[in-house]
Length: 364
Image (cartoon, rainbow, N blue to C red; front, side, top):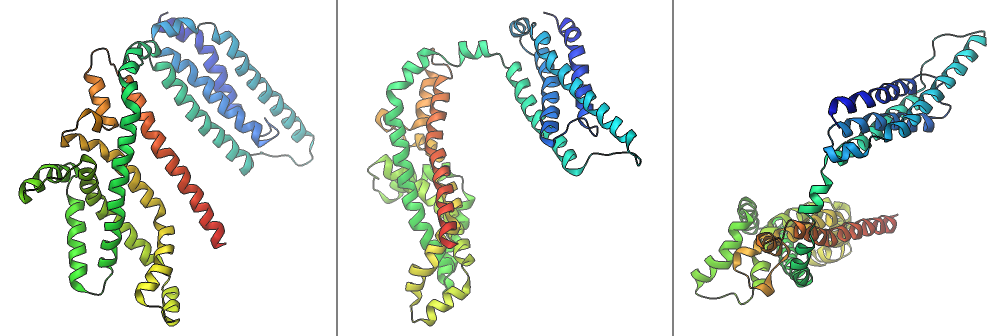
């Protein structure tokens, strides 16, 4: 099916849909803002669909030639409904003793614009969906051979990724809390040491730190770090601690000073005030950035591969690289492993939202 022929077939549909879209912005065409919003959005989608068909693969363009006859009825219906509504509103204004130019009310205008926005969003998705060659994707990207090669190792490598993440987060949280307290200390030496550590590790790429922990430090100290999990925890945890320290420091400084003064006036020591008053409230404040650090640590476990892993120490991204280099593996493993990362990160976001709601109810 040639592009010129498709354009000729779809051009009446596009013209009618554009006319219906213009009618949606006329006063009186639709009685409710919700109907106006739905009509405007539907018109935009009806214009976007032929555009997507014009750039679709040839095999897909040939299969949708029958749709203009079916969906053009929707465009005609929207245009007819808009014209009928406008004629009725116009006749009512002529019968009124005081009639003049009528404009859309703010609520109606907002509904029409919002409908266009929704329609553009859905239209972009439709155009992209039609432009993608799904037949080629099904043949090259989603192969049964790729699934067979990756499936036996997905669960062990998934558990290794979680293990590396939890170890690094334990180091990051504990060291970050110490650094945050040091930076808030009144002792200049502690503040200087914490500032130097934070600036140093924030300025280094994580990959260099991983190399240093895996090879440089054991060589310099003449020792050996026994497990890959411990190496990953130290390397990724030290880098993340610099960012965690700044988040915790900001959370501690956000606690109202009046509560700290009240606790001290009750006879609580500085350490007890931090432990019982400041840190619990700071934790509520820093919960979202701490969750972001966990998610970043989960993705940074992909750097562990430079430590020289055995098959049983692979994490998810290492498995993806091995599957890509295998014959007939395709890109199937990438999609499967991406889903595994989402299985880790999406529940974290959901849990944090629930905890924030719980904290809000507790404060109320």
